[in-house]
Image (cartoon, rainbow, N blue to C red; front, side, top):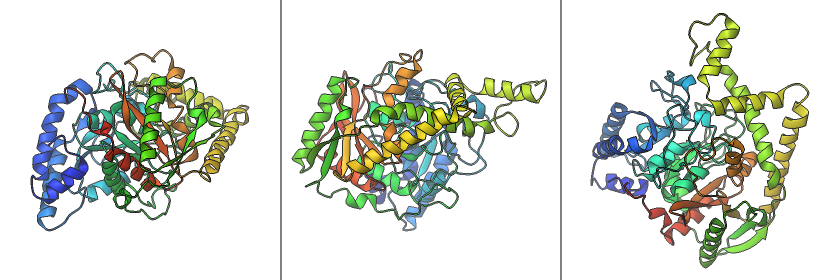
Length: 483
């Protein structure tokens, strides 16, 4: 049962081959057995899961149907879940039980999805390795000595290890696509505003976006269908009709124009990954796609711009965690200033403190124009590059990451080295574009991903290309040894 995809589960439930309750019990037992190796979950919700599974079975018995009805999933632990700990991977929120459900959680529950638990993550979604979590590092099921990527590493590791078929995740600078690449999954960051951020604990509000992590493009289409849509509670939500993502999966790629930016193949890219990307390009050419070299000249400025904008927004968003209203509070404060300083100093980890300090500096008097304003201007140039490129091509293709997953602890003493691993993913967040990573092969036994980018609200096109690619390759079917 654990090897089934979301699509296969939907068919099995519809054909009454098994019940949601039976499947849920199997997966909960599997998590209990295998997750101690991975540390991919922060909280398990067995009682809620069995209750939701029984309710889904009853709905099916009454004639209801739906691809997510009775399907087991998990939520990244920054989506608020009513009455359940929502920690954001931080000591600051270790004791926080959300008083309401995030829109994404409510929508998926309404569709009948079964929540198995909350997955581990980098603290406040800040990281590329899932090593900054208060609950300990997550291990990559492909090699337990390596990172699974971040910040959605818990969701990625759990799905890759077949503990469950799919999970929600979020992407601020690549935090869906990079762990997808590191764990041999398909991960989709939708257009900014496509999925509601209400009830999703913020890191950088103009960059954060929720999306699905699953083994196949077909499964991502199913999960995105349940997540997407306008939400009046979210002022950044876009009132745009949500298409049937599964309906366009089998569209032919004949004549599809794929742009390959020359800037992607620089000295920083592992040549073995470059070779796998070129192999993927040839595969898509066989399916009728037309390849064209393009240029994204401002890509080189994206990382410095991102690491000014994101920390600046984080310093503002995280100011609410002060030891007064909710979250961690230090013991025996001497006065209000001591309460603030010690609660924040003890409640936040090193990486979060680093980014808050960088952001506060960038926004401070005398430096705002020099750093934050300039970074926003670069952001516009990055967006303009994409708009010009999409006048010539339908999608853009390249590597998801410059290197395969690194060893646990390898970049802890050099945070900038970890930041540079986001070079191919952060441009989509700066521009607000949809992006997808799909499995494309292995280097030294570790998975490698290909990234696809599309114009705004063209998630269906990305899923279509990935699905056609997966019909003609088998990388996505590989399972890590021992799982």
